[in-house]
Amino acid sequence: MSFLGDLFRSLQELLAFALETFYDLVPSFGISIIMLTLTINFILFPLTLRQTRATRAFQEVQPEIKRIQKEYKDDPETMQKELMRAQREAGATPGGCLLPILVQSPIWFALFRVLRNISWTANDQLAEFDVEPILHAGTALRAAVERNDIGFLGMSLGSNMSDGITTGGLSALPYIGMLVLMVASQYFQQWHAQRGQTKKTDLTQQPRQQQQTQQLITRGLPLFIGVISWGFPAGLVLYWATSNLFRVGQQFALFAIDGRPSPPSAGPPDGGSPKDSGDGDGNGETGSSAKGSKPHPVSQKKQRRRRR
Image 1 (cartoon, rainbow, N blue to C red):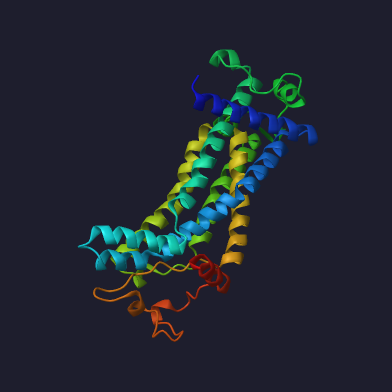
Image 2: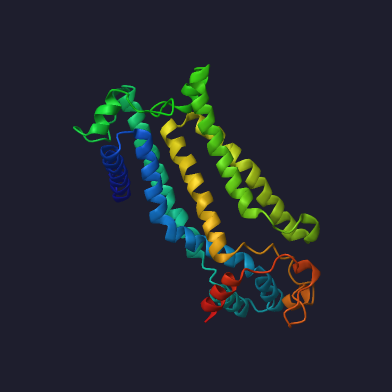
């Protein structure tokens, strides 16, 4: 097995050990998944905060990037230097946007493998798929899984969502409710992040297209996730729904600290500068297109600190 394969297996064993530990504290598989979810999200919070601020910085620096691209279009070398300078001063580093995603993705896939293994263990399917149980022998969670005693809120967390929903009757309601909660929380998180942005009629062509793409993702991504969750273990959907709810609360906290993101800028008109596109006359007054989008004072202070 390759080094990455060994590392991925070690991550799965670590997550399984965490579930076993939480189950020893509270003998409920559902509560164990929720506790693991909260632990992972708290650990990743600094990276998530960095990602949020870097993404916001990229949005705020777009008018300056467009100005540089227009001004130095005949001098690519100088343009590149100026773009790097503008992004660095704004705190818009690519690593800040990508690192959290690179860290979270292996955790999600590893947890998927762990919960799927637990599902196979609960349903006596390990031999069918020629795999060994991920849970350690002699632990209370392993014994509960082997008895298929891993119910939570009327669901068997070892069952696939499709199996639970297609049973019909009242027994399908908890699975449907969990699926609806996951989709709704995902949608609300993305809607809340974009609420208050400039209307499409206030934007020029390129920002309008960007906003349309964002709205399409907001509406389509939660539904897509709900569809692919049809074949996932119920325990994984519980993890996903809990993560969504945590991120909603986290988003409220981040907006309270840094303020809401500024609406997308239409950018300076041809031959103009960012100052000419609604930033006022330099004396603190703003144009009509900037009304209602005053930056949060805390955000302004943080931006000045980054530039220093």
